Length: 130
Image 1 (cartoon, rainbow, N blue to C red):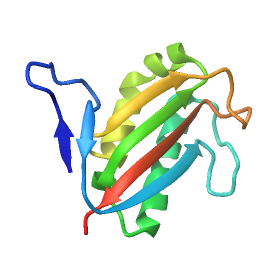
Image 2 (image 1 turned 135 degrees about the horizontal axis):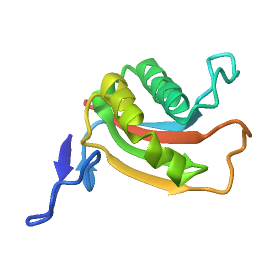
Image 3 (image 1 turned 30 degrees about the vertical axis):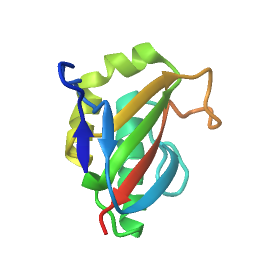
Image 4 (image 1 turned 45 degrees about the vertical axis):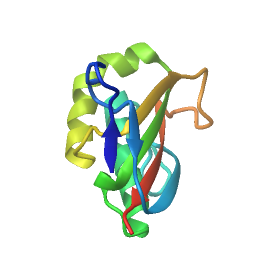
């Protein structure tokens, strides 16, 4: 995997502008912050983000992948201010669960998510090396 950074561009904080990788692609559906039984334990944004990230890693492991194989994430948040306010805690969870920031990422605010209590939904793409 190689992060892509055009000459003269500043290095982005917390993500990569683009990623190039070879191998077997794994596409992970949007994960939300409920537990493995489909129950929310909290309405806290950072805690839900942590749980969603852990779900991504768990699904990826089923394909024989690890967090360092993640090349892309899209975050859907219901409140961008809540997302920004939780930045420090989300960053800590990201470092603990994912561990690296050479991932092409997008975050968008949406009107709502399908599950009413969900504060964030994260989908991911990974490429497991051949």
